[in-house]
Image (cartoon, rainbow, N blue to C red; front, top):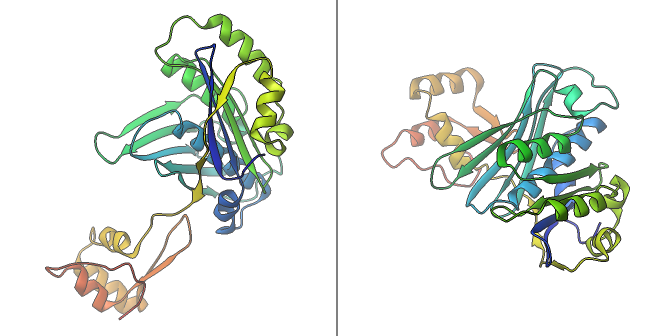
Length: 290
């Protein structure tokens, strides 16, 4: 894998086809370090983070892109998120012991996979992804084929230290590219998980498309970042009444809320509750208590 925590787009000069390569290392490890997940969850979250990074490269928007899988089985939730600033975060929820190895779709049997786009301005969009095949990559390929009518090939891999992804796709609103797609997709299908994790982007492209004229764009940096804050947590508390919040503080000593993504702890006492409901309500970024 080339420069870690980067996303690079690829254009083919003689074909209406595009590609994206993503490699995650520090951002992936930071997301995992906030929790103590079993190996299977770590690998699936790595694939989810690589996938949501790839998907973000196919869109032009200001906001956040969320990829979420959920079921009523042992694996309750897998979620990865990427915004237009290339900030990543991810989380999992599960009950009991999971098998050491299992396929993505088997774990989510009877569940669903959803892509949600939350723009800073405009309407929220949500699309249901069919649970096709075995792996997350198969599901996303089916989504593009059925919902977007875009032939797409996706490779995802993770090993708890690194995560990586590769996307090959017919360009939207282009002409007949069936012949080009058959050629390029056959070449891309030979890419292995081990190669995706260990080879740099230039080597991968040469290995797959050394006879093609392609252009590798400048890389975009990716990083783990959670956008939780004391202010946003305080605003969420305002959905309860002041009396209800004050009673919790009297009973418990304080209201303690941890961010599910980064485990940051926010505490609120009676003075904080009074400030929340004052005319100049403003919870500052500092975590200092009164």
